[in-house]
Structures are given as structure tokens and as C-alpha cells.
Image 1 (cartoon, rainbow, N blue to C red):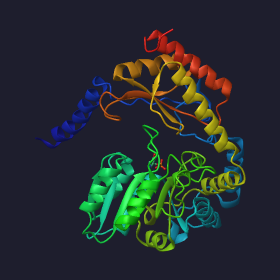
Image 2: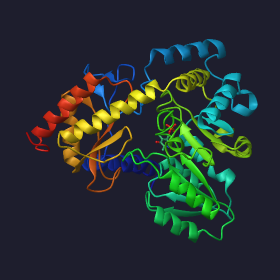
Image 3: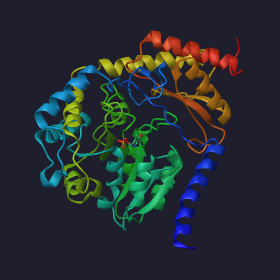
Image 4: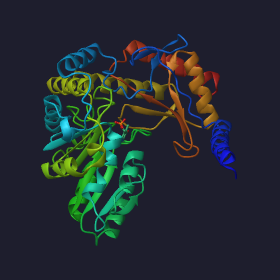
Length: 402
Ligand SMILES: *Cc1c(COP(=O)(O)O)cnc(C)c1O
């Protein structure tokens, strides 16, 4: 190949792969919003839609109080730090947020990251070595999988949410020095909540640590929104918690790891996404602090989300749709067939409801669905309009009777 041809073949190869994705119906197009994120959004085509597919669990993303808090923090601390934390990128607001997150989660200390993806990416390599074992749920988030790959520890995978297989894997890892069980606290595709009470019992029996990723739990799971560990009554028994500031806790971006002091201090010394990436913007740190103060003083948002979830789950089942049972605000409405899921989402869009169809390879073959996500910001009137649209589109496509 000539030099020019080699370059051409690189670009034409990418073009072929993209064409193949489009032909297979796997190409991910992006909706463009022209408004704030919220219960209702305006798209760039001018349509107003009720949004049922954001991780905006507590409805804070477009919330006026959040915007104010971010502006206040920007005025006080400036726009950005132009530095990593350990050089000159740590402000009082970062230390306050780390303290507040630790207290909220019932942990000793917290370290901030630019994203939960980074928190997970930089967690395992500094803490676990060749002599150690990481035992991970098969459906854990991509960032956990990537983070584990970066560590030299032996890897064991247990079948999703399968406690018998977890025990088998713990036994297989018996010769290892340190063991850690790793799981999403709540799984975003099915709304499955990890069986943390049983996981903690198994961990105790096998001398293993427990790590959970609370990205779909922090702020609203459990009676006061602390997370899955509160939901399952195991606060104080989980060793490491990672999570995001980009979902329920405000929705901007940013991530964290909470654990004992020795763990957090080690991460500050050795975790590469922390050492070699910029500080969280002060606006986000300040606004996140305001969120934690709000959630610590009142469970109103969490309670409203819970009430909306109960209301929607019951009503959508009564319409005749099949949903994955559960209690999480992620409600998978099962359609099983990929083209049907796409058509259904498209018809709902025309009817003023924003949802996304998911199909293989994002979910297992034959498990296509639209995933609904409830928010504290949804009014009952909006949910009723969504339910009416689901009913209409479902009848039109022959998915439900009447
Ligand atoms: C969304 C998500 C992440 C990534 O969070 P970011 O802060 O957006 O990087 C990590 N883990 C889980 C389980 C998630 O759902």
C-alpha cells in the first residue's frame, strides 16, 4: 500500500463500519434538545415532549435552585481551576462536598472525580494486585469492567444477581489474598436492585470486601435516599461506594468514591484519573453541596419519585403491558422485538412522549424494550398523558387490547 492508500483505507474502513451499523439498525442517533433538561423538553424541531428517559430521578437537572447554586459557586470560586487537585486545584468547596458526600452515604471519606466512569476506572488498579481477586456481577456497568481490566488482580465473574454462583466464585477465589465483590447497586437496564443483604452475608463468610456502584441509587433509594445499602439495611457493611453527580444528585457531571480513610488516601496518591485529570468545576461542586443539604433536610423529592414510580408501574401494567416487576424508577416495558421497540418509541415521539427503544446488543437478544424512567419532576397529569399515549400506540401496534 502507498502512504496515501493506507490513509484512505483507514477512513473508508470507518465509513463501511458506520454503514453496517446503520443497516443493522444499531446506529445511535442523538435527539437534540433546545431547552433545559426536565419533565418536559423542547427538541430542536420545536416539539415539546414529556421526557421519560432521563436519569433525572429527583428532577434537579433543570431546577431553578440548582442553577442559582451553580451561579453562586461560580461567582465565589470562579469558572474553573486549570489544575488537577494535587497541584492547585482543590478549593474549600471540594473539601466540603467530599465531607458532605461521606456523611450522606455513611462512609468515612470521599474522593471526587470528573465522572463516575473515572471513579470506577481508577478504583481497582491502585487497590488490588496480582495476589487479589475481583468478583464481579456479569452485568456490571462498562466503567467497572474497564476499571477491573486495568488491575492485575485475578478476575471472577458471577451470573447476574445469582447468589449461588457468587458463592461458587468466592470459593474459586479462596486462595487469593484479598477478595472484593463488585456490583451495581441498581442495574439500569432492568431496574434490578442488588441483593446487598445477602451479598454482605456472603462477603462476611468468605472474608471479602464489598464494592457497589450507586449511580442509579444515590439520592433516592432507601428511606432517606442514601442508596441501596440503606434500602437493604446494610449501611456500615459496604466497604467502597462509587457514584455519579450526573444523575439524581443534580445531573451535571462528576463522580466519587466513598470508603474508609486508608482507601481514599491511597486513591488520592495513586488513582490515575484523579491524578492526571482536571478538578471538578466549582459550579458543580457548589451545586452538588446544595443538593446534599436539601436531601438531608427533607425526603420530599425522594418520596415524590417513589409515589410516581408506584403510580406508573401499576397503571402501565393495568393497560396490559408487560413490565419487569420491581420498585425502581427504571421501568422496562417489554416488547421483545427490536423493530417493534423502535416503531413504538417513534410513535410515542409523535404522540409527545420521549422514550428510547433498547435492543440487542444493549440488552439480551429477544429482550427488546422501551425503558421508562420516572422523575420527581413528573406531575400526575403528565404521567396520565404518557399512559394515554402508551395505550394509544400499544393499540395501534396491536400490543395491547381494547
Ligand atoms: C451512568 C453510570 C456511570 C457513569 O457515570 P458518569 O458520572 O456519567 O461517568 C457509572 N456507573 C453506572 C452504574 C452508571 O449507571
